[in-house]
Length: 340
Ligand code: P6P
Image (tube, rainbow, N blue to C red; front, side, top):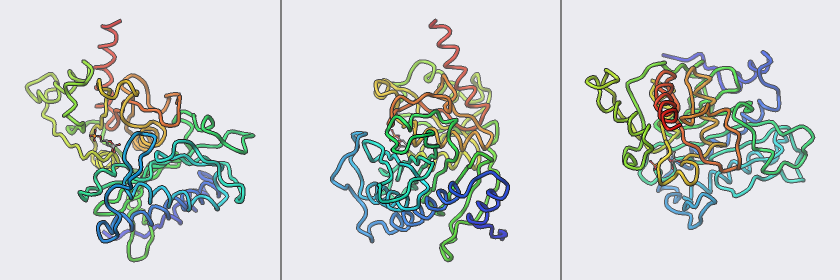
């Protein structure tokens, strides 16, 4: 079906005309989208571009960086430095946040991103993506430091991801619905292909790394055990399982056809608070999911209400179809009540 070719630029101008974004935030989203196009080209070259494999460096997460992690991070830093829309930015790949250099004007927003999430999948040609979150720089702060980013997810003014898969698709919210834009590679424009994504409330599909099963907390063991019991078990229906190990790809599937994504606490990651990072993975994905009618939780608290205690804070994650997230939370709530 042909689309009436509403470009991202036109969509954002119409959002601005409707008073849902201002000129500075519109510019910010356009700049990030343009950077994602550059990253998409680099990812797409693969071995031909000499961009696969390790960079030979590590990040604060204790992870070995891929060459494309560093490339994607540099693309986003360069693209956002000079536009005057940001006061500062923070990245999974950088130990601390970075104020916009003094040589450039500073704006009112803070940008946080995971420049290339799921990068362990690059060398095997599985979809990866860029995740970003936008916060306001606190009033009166001209040189933002890490503590100025530590705002709950409800404070996000925009969030999105770009998935580099068979299509390059930007999924975006500015607080009024979640919308998908597919890259027209011939023209080089993102074209609106889904206005107002909606996640089905119920689902029969769950996403989890089941190899961690023996390390999970009791409520998670029981929750997944009941899913696997299928129609003969307490849930009364059979479930399917998917795990791409690329959050952007798993979440895109859930936004498109429903499901529940979970990366719960396990005895390996519990000492760090979880596996996935709150500020530039869980929070932006949770805003997109809630704006599409879904739910997002740590298993014990609404994700967007978590008060960050650090730029790279990790959390357990349950997000997707609202009724299924509520079911998963109920297992944790009844376990905790029993424990109490
Ligand atoms: P595991 C990728 O490294 C990532 O941060 C997410 O994109 C993904 O959902 C998760 O980790 C995969 O973790 O333990 O299954 O490799």
